[in-house]
Image (cartoon, rainbow, N blue to C red; front, top):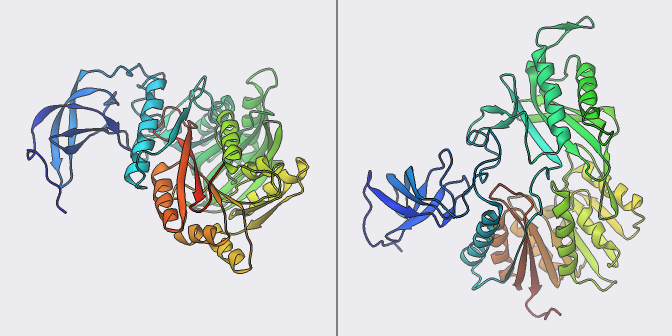
Length: 466
């Protein structure tokens, strides 16, 4: 059916617009005469709650694009950015919005997506759990390297913005970046009889275990080796150690080799294969390429909510799909009969098994493979589960996996996602397989961005949850 609007829009038309939402690229979103209008993100705006003067630049059948001319009435949530790179860096697009405004926006967007995409009338969303202090929360920072800069890509480009300070990253990330920056500055120098050729550096990823202070650096290069890598390791080690009071130590360095965006391999070149973290009294080990929640403070809230929604009494079989290093399933294991995890990353499966051992958990086992392929095989063999925990990548779950969850008889599904749009799409599919949406709780794992984590509870339609 063709969309109809109160009044046709004209290209070049200027008008006032209230920004009632924000798009995935930080655009301001409002409505004029019933038509959605996307106002491109420029400089310090627009943000949720602004009233702006905009000019139409492109008109489609269902929406229009506009440019920002000026902010007529600023949002009550508007504030000054805290980073000098805020207008260039593509990482923190909500720096000019007060934290309470970010939480309000994210909760609104979640409700809208459950209603619009999943087709749920008045979705029961239990609010959003924010952080007491939304700074220095990231335990993993991937920094691009280019033209002598070490930092993050500018929005919608491959220009590297040199960020000497990043207030959402752990301090070891800044220290490692400074060491890499210094190493790059030695381009062409001969040290120890060998030439420094840092031009092949592509990016560096720093993982920090907040609970132990252990640090891992993963250096990615274009090629098969990094000349004088031992010097870079020494420089990174000294930089991390210099942070102060012996709080942090570089325990592992990995080299990721390859060409373009297709890495060939990742191997440890110094230190241990894993670093260990302690969260909520449990110890977790992680290897260079395994998935681990980036915000450990909020992860405790996330795991607690998953455990609440799982409703375990002590004898249930729990399926933990896309289990990463096993954190969520192991968190629930003491209240379950058995936990079966499925994960495609071989290193993460090794970590998950090790994490079960170091925490004294004997009722968890892991399968290495793609969940959408392995679960149908298990269903064919008669495997059954009482509770299914799904924590897929941003793209969500394949339909085959969702169908298999119903085939193994799960009465409850706890669906964890950092992309509520794909989660809502999958919830709509699960309704076809006999599940009903019960409620969702939001955890703000990513302050200053438009992303949030959702934990949704679904039940089999013939089961009344207590």
